[in-house]
Image: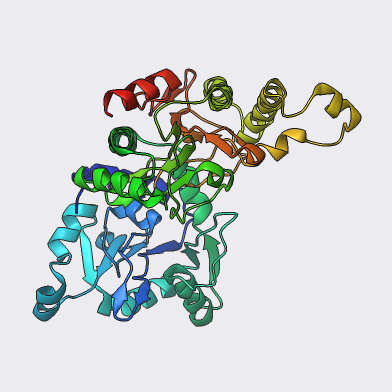
Length: 429
């Protein structure tokens, strides 16, 4: 574990809050993520199921949380199951959770081995009529891979067809949307590491450097400061590549005179930072690059002020589109006369194609929809952009914001003013 231990009370309170939302005569199950095969005899680096981590802090594969709040035996109301690792496995793969360690991390006092799961679960299922199953219900997520929670759900439906199945995801979404003080502190740490990575790039980027070289500088700074690495695949898009929204091959040279758009963020204790910055590769914006950059920065500053309790991200998006439309006209990309001639056409969409905000937390695109009414304590991104493919210019700027009456910018210390960026790049060359 690279991160500082998280107070166990955080996980205890999260479970207590979830239990209050469960219907009577029910049990709930959350599984760990799978170890995903990479190639040969290798797996990808393990990343825990965000819901299981939120409820237990357990950061290991093959763990299960079982909640049964109405069980007559108090010690069976919360149970964690872990693999029983033998000495030979420890020699090859290192230490895994012991029952004592799992109790210490999660605060769950009853820890059993996985070999006992089916017997325990069958006993509980015979007592209670509802089973809450956890699924990834992110609206835009589609996968052909039958992940562990999905496989378990299929097993439950086949083995217990007369039980009532309930959805756990809506309840966890409601809880995870509002960030606790502990979560905010972790996310501040992720943002701080992200800041350190960006400042390193300002010191090291050079004309002719490969995009993956810039990515390597970020990765170096992230890892040396206790991050597990990138919270998502980094976008290092130089020149016209910046007009490809999800460009992440990062295999082209950074050419003198071009901009490089970087969308990157450190993950710390499984929480994400999400930052975008656009800088001149040679350290100096051209006049046109500066015009576009300042236009995006103006929209960012205005949009942050809109991220207050009582609005939805859809409503914020409407206002941002109006701002972008006005900036595009000021940049000479089209005119009011063009709009009048084609009143049904969204001219700005040719230069700004994505949403300005999403929720952030344990997932970089965290739980919550664009129709959720914002509340104090939610954390969202703010990421306007303007992309002019014909000019090879793409600018996106992104900070992470705590929703409040006066929104709090978690990335206020990361350089963003054009003059400051040029000064820092000039100082370090």
